Length: 140
Picture 1 (spheres, rainbow, N blue to C red):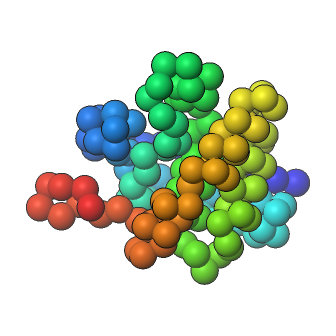
Picture 2 (picture 1 turned 135 degrees about the horizontal axis):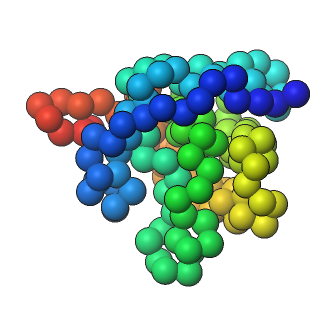
């Protein structure tokens, strides 16, 4: 059965970055058992996430923003680790993890649609490394 095996513990490292979403650093490993992947994913301490990339347009953000943080971190991690799965599978794990997190069906479906139709550029860009890093005080 899919489940989070640990709590999400993060700290904000730049609340103005990523179009206002901010960048957050995972402080303690986040573990998630995925039925879709058939294994446990461990997001390591130090991984940097921007949570869900929901546009800051009022209606979209009101409906889909600032929710499903645990699932978003798993999704971000998968987008940086192409060796684990392909983009479609990563998006499906987001949907699965959002359900585990207790996000209502219409909201998690909307979030999934956003990644399905708006995430390809991020998949290509994020796949070039294993996560964001801090270099000379800047997040890259």
